[in-house]
Amino acid sequence: MTKILSCLALESFSLALKMRLPDSVSEFLETAVEAAKKAGEIIREGFYQTKHVEHKGQVDLVTETDKACEALIFNHLKQQYPSHKLIGEETTAAYGATELTDEPTWIVDPLDGTTNFVHGFPFVCISIGLTIGKVPTVGVVYNPIMDELFTGIHGKGAFLNGKPIKVSSQSELVKSLLATEAGTKRDKSTVDATTDKINSLLFKVRSLRMSGSCALNLCGIACGRIDLFYETGYGGPWDVAGGAVIVKEAGGLVYDPSGKDFDITSQRVAASNPLLKDAFVEVLQQSE
Image (cartoon, rainbow, N blue to C red; front, side):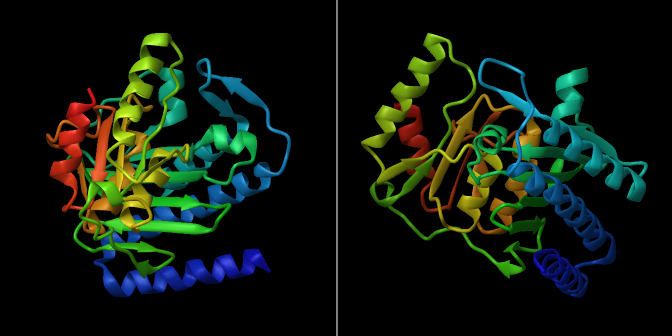
């Protein structure tokens, strides 16, 4: 029954999408949604089973599910758009960095929140972003455990399960909910710098959350669940390519924690509604 409902929801979403968007752009987004939904079935099935875990670092994990999802998504995208470029977390980890060019490029995190997945914590997602001219243009982030599908396309708005979403209207830091992550490095200097920064920021905001997924943190900004988010030293552009589009299309801002323009390749990101940006950048700089 759940599978039937999911298929009906996808068909309804696809129909609504075609009515709203130009053909080529609607096809890009629809293809990404189809790939995310298919990968979501693999994640949902594996979520309740014993996981076979490998270590990419001391606390950075990868599972067979990560690899299976990336292969499925890449195959789906290659069939539809054989000339497009592909960048994925697991292939990049295995074969080295892939340069981002001006050509249409799909940037994929097949399972953002792998540690959550391993522990049975339900904040996991597939993130798919399409850049054109190096600009994030299409974004899909799908949490198959909570069945939440976030979508966005440049100039066309952002949606959660087909319904429009907007960033919060909060204008005061002290009333804001902040999200960040501790990262995967556990050397003393990095941990000390991370916790010192968090300790400083806790005096400026209402409270702090760590969901374990950069993509879902960005989507939290987009739908107003979170007011502020920053992270440095995350894995790569696959963590932010999908979510960045969704935040911007929800009326939010994505920028470097220094306040400078966001660079998708920099491994540095901050996001908020427009009302909080200046104050947020100021306290981020004070906490350095």
